[in-house]
Image (tube, rainbow, N blue to C red; front, side, top):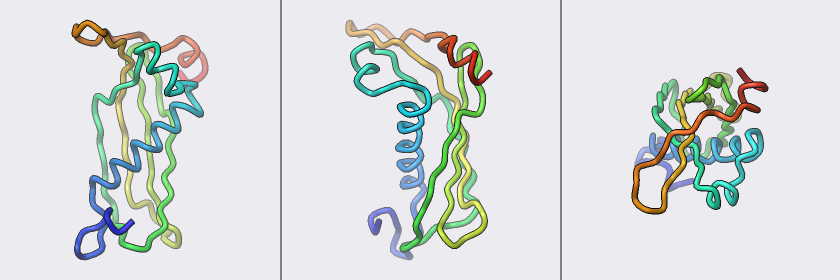
Length: 127
C-alpha cells in the first residue's frame, strides 16, 4: 500500500512489523488453535518477548509481498516463530524475522500477568 512506503517508495520497517503481526495471528489461530474469541474470554494470550529482524533487501511500492510463518521451536515456557517476506518476481528473501513468545494469563483486577506453561499438546507436536 502507498501508506506503507516512504517518499522514495521504499517499504517502512513498521509496515513489515504489521505484516508479521498479521501472519503471527493467522498462525496462532490456524496452526496453534488459539482463536481470538477464546483468548479474549479466557484471558490467556501469547505475548511477544523479543523480535529479531534482518532486512535483507528493500521492497518498494508495487511489489506484491508474501509472508510465511511457522512455529520453529517450543519449550516449557517459551516458543519461537520465524517469518520470511518475499516479493513476487524476486528470488531472494527480503526480510527474515524470529520472535520469542510466552503465554500469559491476564488479570482483571490490575495485578500483573501470570506466565503460563506451554500447552502439552504443543510440546507433543512440535518439541
